[in-house]
Length: 79
Image (cartoon, rainbow, N blue to C red; front, side):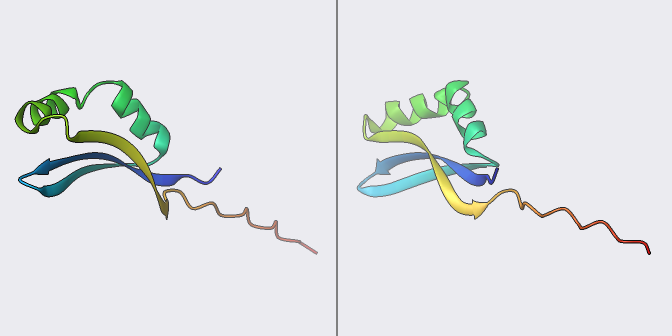
């Protein structure tokens, strides 16, 4: 299975400037686990308290493979 790097993106606005804070993961499953573990809730809540409800958090899958799949070498034929 081919997997792609995935970014956990927290997006918000500060004085009409759009800000995106990113943490990278090896695959989408790890990103979703980070969101579900609520490990970023303190940061999210802090930004929410400062800048209001114009904030979002999401996982974005990149187009860059995180794992290279290589075919197995052919066995050498000994004659």
